[in-house]
Length: 217
Ligand code: SF4
Ligand code: SF4
Image (cartoon, rainbow, N blue to C red; front, side, top):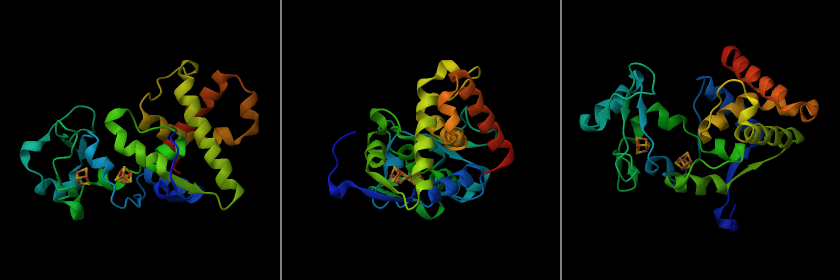
């Protein structure tokens, strides 16, 4: 990571509070409230935007020419494709033109997840987000905050670097790795994990992800 000036540091909040909220968000129980400030990284980074049926107010404001049906999102959902230059078509003069009714995807996206996992959001096309990711600074009011952040980072590093240890397919993209790490970080809170075979750790991660997906945060 590059050297940062004091001005380029942005408070991300206490780590464990953020982690609980993110886990609830991943369950669909609540959205994230990201202190984005003037950043529009999400809106200029080439993301396709998922439009769910409940995003009808946003859909009504988006010209039909930008809306397509695309593979990869849940059945029935539509997609707003980014422009060739990576900008969301609803970005106008550096601001979201449908901010008050922006889709849930925009409300849910929290780039602190990459800071939590200790990884970039992606390559050059995600440079604006990567910059913000490097600026976030979590705080650690309790020892638990430090331990949980270390565990999330360790989980992300394992999933990214030990793909061969898994017998099932695991995410290769930054967001997928970070989400897995948030779901399975508790594996790395256990001091015994460091003495286990990699295949055993990989199994524990998959079990933790499945338990999260079936039981909740
Ligand atoms: S990149 Fe992060 S800070 Fe910037 S708009 Fe997106 S979520 Fe907010
Ligand atoms: S709809 Fe608005 S908030 Fe969402 S990506 Fe487009 S410009 Fe950004």
